[in-house]
Amino acid sequence: MNPKVAIYDTTLRDGTQGEGISLSSADKLRIADRLDAFGVHYIEGGWPGSNPKDMEFFTEARKRKWKHAKIAAFGSTRRAKEVCSRDANIQALVDAQTPVVTMVGKTWSLHVREVIRVSPEENLAMIGDSVRYFKERGKEVFYDAEHFFDGYKDDPAYALATLRAAQDAGVDVLVLCDTNGGTMPHEVSRIVAEVKRQLHAAVGIHTHNDCGLAVANALAAVEQGASQVQGTINGYGERAGNCNITSVMANLVLKMGIPSIPRENLKHLRELSLFVDDLANVRPDIRQPFVGATAFAHKGGIHVNAVEKVARSYEHIEPELVGNRRRVLVSELSGRSNVLLKAQELGMEVNKDTPELREILKQLKELEHRGYEFEAADASFQLLVQKSLKRHKPFFQLLGYRVIMDRRAQDGQQICEASVKLRVGEKAEHTVAEGDGPVNALDTALRAALVKFYPAIQKVRLVDYKVRILDSGAGTAAKTRVIIESTDGDSIWGTVGVHDNIIEASWEALVDSVEYKLFKDEKRK
Picture 1 (cartoon, rainbow, N blue to C red):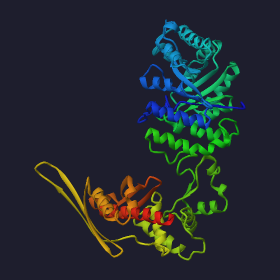
Picture 2: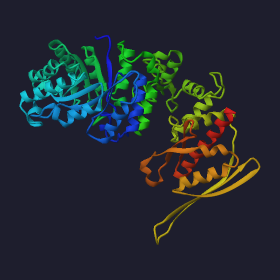
Picture 3: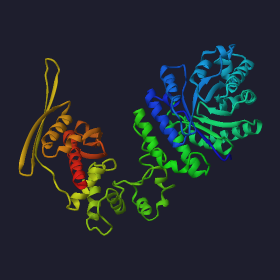
Picture 4: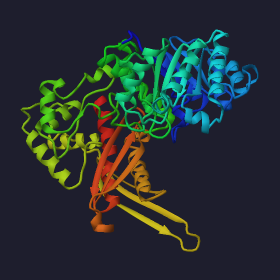
């Protein structure tokens, strides 16, 4: 294996081909800054000439000094029967003025015959001419051999001939692409080994995840001598996505011991993953290896008990190595260890000798049986423990609430109104508010009633609202679970409510959300 594997990020181009992924030029520059700071070696900015957004990125990128990364522009080989100096795509790559140019070309004879419809000889000339044109201009050139593995399996002689055309023209890296994402790891291993045997140029790997094997295939190629891995942060990409270099970087350094990204930089891996998700407006995948919220989450009582004693008994690495943390989940599967460690994780003063621990566990399981779920509702769990320990201070007392919905037949206009009666200390407060629906009206009325007593409530806003029907066989009389995520700008917390009446379930979750905020602020003081 080579002593170093370079990371080539194509989030800004190939990643944006994924459904629902869109980045502005400003977003691209911010992501490129983060990738550069993280230690990524190459950042592919896009396809110059294809759209104004990509050209704007390259214009701005030229003005910056990059600490670690080289910026690459992506394009295709020259058109058939055209010269590079007159080819619009080639000249757009010239205009991008990047130190690295990545050329994609056809390596599968099927595509040569049926898609671009040129002779095999002309395709080889297109590859060689394009690579040579940029090498003569002092560029670092990578040749992306599109559909290479399918092409090799169909016609190995011609697939290798396309690589030789690029090699003979002076290419720096031959990037073998599993464009359809259907190749198996053992096939990748065998074919890359054969390429390394027959050619002397450096080899890279570009895989897609259509079989869920993109990372495995990339690592298989590295084992056979590939010195560059292309992929995207969080695996964004067309269809099932690209190779997830978030996982690749961690595996290379922590599992395979191959120098690539500096080991100390990996402690920012989760932060990088979440940053890119945030700019792409994508909800993070909680089950993503290494960086997902549940990557080091433990739920089964036996597992938690073991982790408490020896962390590596159920964890393949220390979570902190990739900027993650251990989490303990509480559910009907919980034992005393879950409750104890979860309470300690939340900063509560309990230990194995706390007499109420058994009662908390009993109550937790009863509530779970009734439909409550605390895995995404840490705040409700913390309030539950506080109440069991007789440490809960009620910040207000509900005297009553009412929700009215009025739909006018003449114009179809709907009005939702909620009134809330509370007692705070010795003072009673009665507030009425309208909203877009009954829950929004209740939320608005509750805040309005409390804000004069607790001004910090103004900072709290709802960021997510989920409803789950628990016994669908009961039809419209089914029990409902509501989970609410709230934030005050500094942190996010989850609360839960369960009831046959969706409004009452929502009220429970809303009250827990507000009480948790008030408790958190008081504890900080």
